[in-house]
Image 1 (cartoon, rainbow, N blue to C red):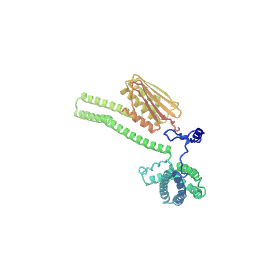
Image 2 (image 1 turned 30 degrees about the vertical axis):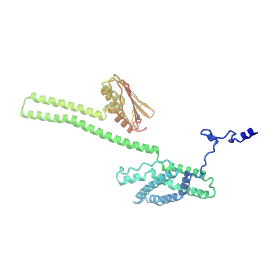
Image 3 (image 1 turned 90 degrees about the horizontal axis):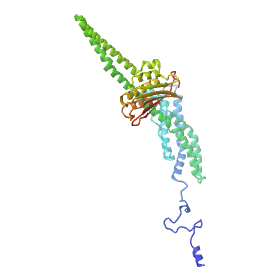
Image 4 (image 1 turned 90 degrees about the vertical axis):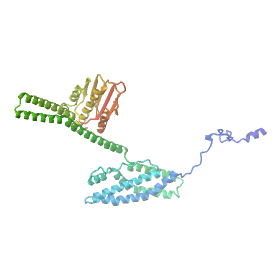
Length: 413
């Protein structure tokens, strides 16, 4: 009996197993009850505060839209209408910034600020006003302020009585209502990630195009100044000396030699002008298309080059020119740096893209940042939504693939 009593005195857990004796590691975590937690945690109170402030913020926003925006829109037939509307949209942008800050603070919504308007680069006052008038961020904020008034009335009417009557289920109501708020904030006040990325790309590409055009103009000016212009100056001086010799009655042999020298200068100047024109836009590309133009540039390469062009029709002039100059510069790199014995150029169309692939069996090791003009080619292709892929392991071979958007000559994609 004593043994039985002693055994029954050992406390047991809910499952019939002996309870923990207090030694470290002797108990089981799944036997313990979860810790007590307040039903209204800080996040719930933040959500309730957001719902309670919805109505006053909605009243402010709705009043602003109906007074400033609607008034400005109704007065667009007058001189002051458009400036007033532009000023109102600028204020709407500021109200959207405040609403995003409120959502981040109380709802813990991860939302970025949209890019500021590039007013400094817009030009004059009319251009700046037009930029503000077509601002999608401001117009989405106006729409947000218009639809918030009925929603603010609904949330205020639900939350205030629930604080006194339905407080046991208020956390669930608050979470459901604020989820709708989160959706509205993300849908109307958040910047479009794709749009923002595209705007940044277009701004960057515009800078690349401007810089490339300026560099090309400087190159043409330098080539004219150092080449054809210098030869034409020498030609004028030579002809002037020949004229003086004739007037002085000197021997015909001396004058003939000077005229012969001037004739040589003329031929060299014409050749340099042809080369310069070919660098701007080769005539063979305009007259006979990309296949003939690539065959022509390949014939001047120091490495035997096989050219294959499989195009159903001619692309737009801009795309055709970019493809030509890309291949031309790549073949120049092969001649100067690769040490290759053979190379190939393949051009074909795949869907709405045109692909150009240049291959050589040289030493390899080419890099985009290696100083051989690869970075400039990549930037030019990127400026027209193209791609530039370089594969050049040490020891070769080197394969460069350029992808360009296809546009027909008539301008159709």
